[in-house]
Image 1 (cartoon, rainbow, N blue to C red):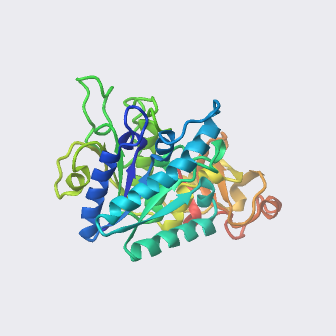
Image 2 (tube, rainbow, N blue to C red):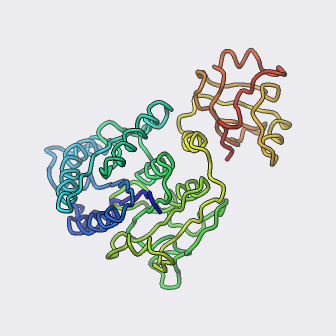
Image 3 (cartoon, rainbow, N blue to C red):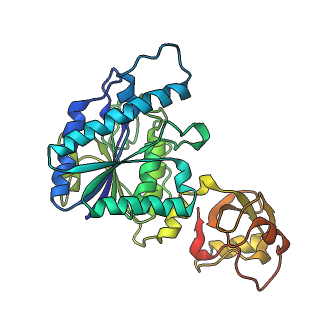
Length: 357
């Protein structure tokens, strides 16, 4: 493996009292530095800004959850990146900060600008440390959590693997605290429903639970990237996971053998930015779900909802109103509405810009 993304969860970097665990952070930096020395390109997606700020500042009056996140992350992010900078400098390495928001993944131009920035950093042996910009990401514009962000980064940067470090050994086939339950070691690519196994409780310091991790991991693995969920509090976890024939306890999601194009990867993760809906008839749905690659043609469209521009992301809905995919449209909504039902026109969504659920 030449290029990996490592997501460090807030529960790995946070002590029981909610403050930053510097010892653990230092140990993980040592591991990343060793891998970096071996020629591996690594992008870190690090939580911990809110925890870092919480220990630094005592708010004068009771804050609502959004204000608290903004305040703690503004103070904590500076402290967090400074800590990383000092720790990597001890190894003679440089790290750089990349703060992003969900909106940056909604436009293809912003997406490519962000990708270019991180490519330049990697070319110059700088380790990117990515976090959501919590100071401006509020409610509907927020990522579910940094698991979602790490999935987007892994696909955007064409990673060989994504390692999600949590405070348990992987996905259990029952309650992790139950002695009879054990870690599911491998999950094949495809639509395995893991919701029956997974605890729905959120992490005490982060926003994401194990179900989010599973959903993201499956999506990323379907796009041809290996995903590992493991315990970041274990000593030397990264080298052990990446060793050849590693038998370290963790959950591995086996990647699809046929990688997806970079445009399709972007579209797959962009449904949250959909500007409209394309409703299609039964015949068009059958054509799309057949083995042969097919575009969405206007002749099979029954109605169009929402206002969108050319190249915007839209949802594709069947006759029952169920979403079957997302795509990048070749028409604006006004033009497309005029052409509904017409034959022999360019596709509304070409299959190169189409991702089926």
